[in-house]
Image 1: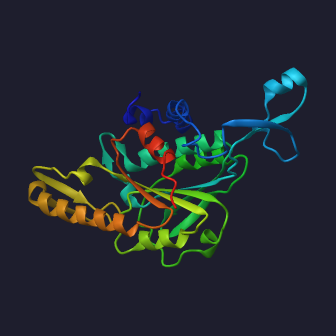
Image 2: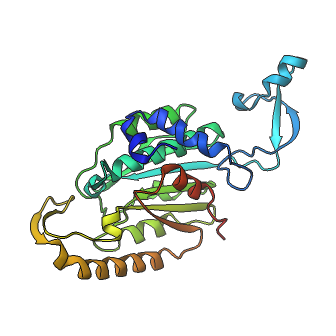
Amino acid sequence: MPSNLEIIKLNDLRLSARLISEQLRQGIHSGIRVGVGSEFEQYRHYRPGDDLKRIDWKYFSRYGKYMIKESTTESNLHVRLMLDLSGSMNYEENGFSRLDYAKNLLASLAYLGYLQGDSLSYYTLAEGKIEQKVAPTPKSFQRILFHLENENAHGSWPISEIPTYLTQSRNRELIIWVSDFLQKENEWENLVKAFQHPRKELILVQLLGEQELNFNLDGNFIFKDLESNQEWIQDGKSLQNEFRKRFEAYLDQLEESFQLPRVQLIRTSMQTPLAELARRILNRKQLK
């Protein structure tokens, strides 16, 4: 299995998405699929408006009829992918940034959703606003890849008001946020609560570096706030105990605040293999 660095250094999101997704598809079954069911139950005749990808072309080659395979579960799921583009996503470890990791993860999830017939849309959070970059259309996957390839992270994103059109939808949705979930006040908590709805499942993917999770630096270092660009020099060893104490307290508080119906926080290191994290997301618990 290629390493995260090897996948990211390909600099080709379409290829990396296929590499990651192919590893997963070998093990996907009804319990972890994202979209349209894959367990065959019966045939029905094609009707105008049906997705052409669901036609059984082998059946057509034999009998000359357009037939659709129906599965035991039909989801018609809308998957909303949301990426944090604030400056802290530029944090780097071991040759790649948090943003690099996030792009490749979202590309693989979008590819899986595309293969399974899910409706896909894509949003970014940056510079004080949430922006829809890709609406759900038949070409959403290609457009998502295009935008991911060109995304840059900078500044901060906290917003004073959440646009109502983003939270009013009552369709069945899986919303996947990818971020470090670092906040100054309670902006993430407020945003997640605004999106809560019985027909929406929210998966919050928190990407953190090993040095963030297990701070262990010895010697003088230049520390930089990636959102304000402020810098200061400090001995890493002298900060170690206090940093760990405060950061662990913050993570505990964040986890507690996300103990909400149909909300799941997945916290992971940037060293976690991309395929493993994608599998964890697909194997999400059926939240009640």
